[in-house]
Amino acid sequence: MKLKPVILAGGSGKRLWPMSRNQYPKPFLTNNSQTSLIQNTVKRSQNLGLALPVIVCNEQNRFLLTNHLNSISAPVEKILLEPFPKNTAPALTLAALYLLRNFGDHILFSMPSDHFIEEDENFFEVVDTASKLAEDGGIVTFGIDVQTPDVNFGYIQKGDSTKNNYYELKRFHEKPDSKTARRMHESKEFFWNSGMFLVKASSWIHYLKIHSPRILEACERSIQNGVEDGIFFRPESKSLNDCPSKSIDHAVMENLEFPGNIFKNWVIPLKSVWSDLGSWGSFMSSQNPDKSNNLLHGEVITDSVQNSILISDHRTIAASHVDNLIVVETPDAILVADRNQEHRIKDLVDKIPAENTAIFESHKKEFRPWGHYEILDSGKEFQVKRLTVLPKHALSLQIHHHRTEHWVIVSGVATITRGSETMTLKKNQSTYIPRGVQHRLENDEGENLEIIEVQSGSYFGEDDIVRLEDRYDRTSRK
Picture 1 (cartoon, rainbow, N blue to C red):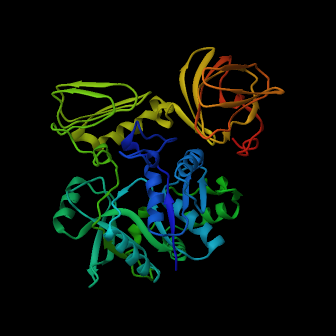
Picture 2 (cartoon, rainbow, N blue to C red):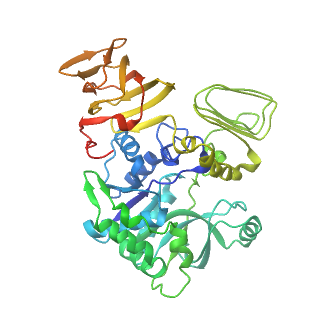
């Protein structure tokens, strides 16, 4: 039976704010390399020689995801678009039901898209062992050796061992308090939960019927009434409204000790280097600290600074005579925290939507199927954007009722439709788009096209875009 990777690309990564936002979540961050975490996860499934993956992600991140996939030329089986986040159990259930309906009963390899794993010999061996165990119908997961008492991880209690050095899975425990974490560490009976699971699609459905029937019923209706849209599949949103929002652990794994479970479940020790990258310390762990034990990224100047994490994304950070600080700078937000209290950052971020929803939801950079734009400046009657159009992509043929636009080419070659005329503009050339005139911007070349767009008018909302033609089918969809 062939393994089918199911990559879960949701979540907001609150502990990595302000880099991670709802509309630019943790899987799309780059961890000291040229590729993002989601790209690394897709490559991992390729390196294992698995079938094409199914990816589950939020509807609002669909173009961000396809941009990341296209940039590494990574084909996928299907992208399931959640209309709104409902946590990992519904996400895995949607994938299981979709695969059962279209491809038959596969072993699902549920993979978080935001972890770091060293792909060594041990990793390939445990995946092979786990796939064979999962054929018998149980759930198989990987356990990480508990190195320190840590309240940021879920824990797995191991049962009887086998001669092959894996264990019956005795019990799952959600993130403990500090006292319980110390006891678990001292007992030597526990692993950290890696977040990876192998289970037959039909077995996962069996467990849901017992432990989380409301999730199963909602997801079944949503898949039944969903719509195919090219590489995307859109589960019906109405059916998911009342679906409980639960993690895989809460929905099923913590209940495996109860009656009604007819299969044996297993945990296999994973000796490979692994991290859930759930904190700034772990996110920066692949970088070597300087002689003062600082982890620095970007334009950073220090004087007598120790044990700190300083990350500059846009402007220069200058720090003097401080210790154990975290400073993360982006174009629109700055985080300052005590490194010894890093686990409390999530509590701070939970307060942000009440104060400033926009700063919680998104960066200044917005992604579209043709590329992305960034708002550089704005005022009462103007807005300035920088647009990046990917090679062989184009904006829709459109009109605006409330604004005019001036376009200045910064790099690349632009093919521009304005009314009945078509023109080609190069670096340092510009044009003007009057209000109410149909227009389109295209990049027919092999390199990115960058332009500065100056909008002038009374309203600049995205709903002032009237699409007449669109190669991404957005005349009927946002």
